[in-house]
Image (spheres, rainbow, N blue to C red):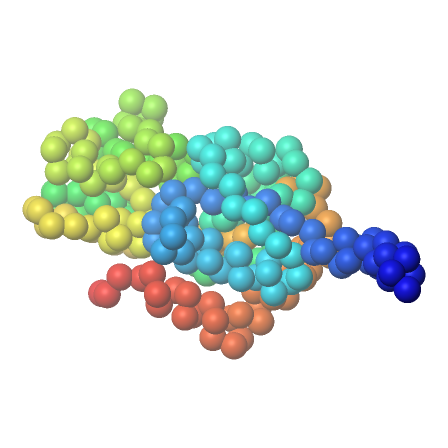
Length: 239
């Protein structure tokens, strides 16, 4: 009987391995409240992507790398996800666009009087802090900002302190990131909301259609049942 039990266990072992869900790599930056690494959660898009992938029947391995490198690795890999990625013209052909989480606007944060347009900012500001490899950097370059006007920062730095110390004239970022870092000290002025773009869960250009469909459907299910809104409300600061 003991021998029979051992044989049965060996026969069943491949089935248990086959039932193990595949693990999907997910890149996300340090850009709270949109994405973050820590015990308190992974930010709006991080939590949303993780829940969607898990609901789709996969396990998640969260990856942390400099934002430009994370994008490059995602593009060159197969079946790797990345968030939050704004859907821009230059990025369009380099990713598989899986699911639209929500639209997101940008703004200039400064100690000066707020601007109302990108053109006004281009004419007024001598130096603007902007995240390296972000959609914000792409937006400013397309709006005619010169290399000398851009102070590129790694995500996770504290550009608001650069504004307060007078090292840059303004910080151009998403309105949620700017408000999140709005701490004690001299009050900052925020410009009009500018350059709205949809914020996506994206995948490598070579991406399994089943993965794309299942994660997309899971995210839409989260939108319908209120799970996505509850994630947003957890991280968005009181206005």
